[in-house]
Length: 218
Image (cartoon, rainbow, N blue to C red):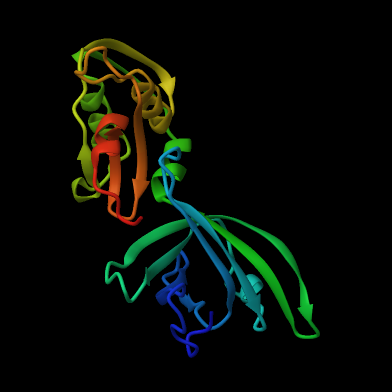
């Protein structure tokens, strides 16, 4: 979707910002040269991720000196919603580079939330005594992954307490371990909890509360 095409139908999105930022602070606007943008958010995935297919006629791939420390700034919205997704992602991989014409090429940029990259570089070794799993999740987000408190949204309460020793696991692995052992106050207790990131931030939700919420669309 090129910038000058605009929104032509109910299924189109308005891409307001789509630019790469490198470690030197240089930026490249991709809105007129991208072919396809995919953005994923899933209650079974800890973070948001996606990919972009770029048609490059100016050899951005070589001239921009991709080194694994680039970011993608994104702002995308549906005019009918008026609630844009605005976020800065980390570009963690490039791929599928091939000639597209006599003077151009295409390649794919893969991106994810910064917390996934940080989590893969870090190990957590600590002990919790008499803690609810929701408090363990909140502690990992704030103190290990250094997530901005404004990005931590709904955190459903859990029942029971644990004495837990974390044996050198990645922060997001600890969170998913805690989610798999969380249960609510229902009788009998239900053990289905999800940790995921959506457009609003990080969520820790029980199946019981999710299913009771009003659907966004029917």
